[in-house]
Image (cartoon, rainbow, N blue to C red; front, side, top):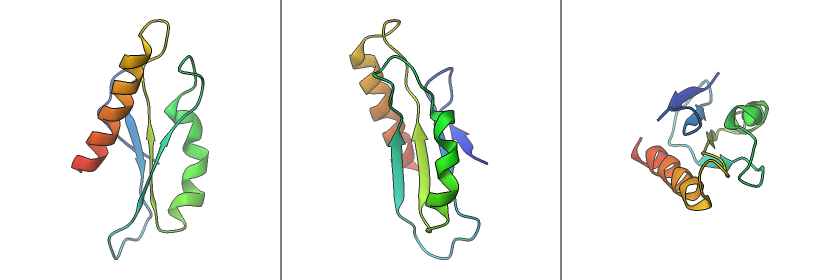
Length: 88
């Protein structure tokens, strides 16, 4: 199951970590598709076991959608999500 950080309705990051960690691990950051109009970070959680089983941390970043928000807001949300991961 994921740990969710920096959560609001759409802006959030789900983090999936391997069960056993004995060294620093690489991080795979995934930003879901959907043409900036739809989709959800929760929809890609099914990929997490395949990634974490290879001793990687899997992060799924969410963002707000067009037309309620412009593309620059969506891009800023993605950037902020990556920054939150980096700060951990």
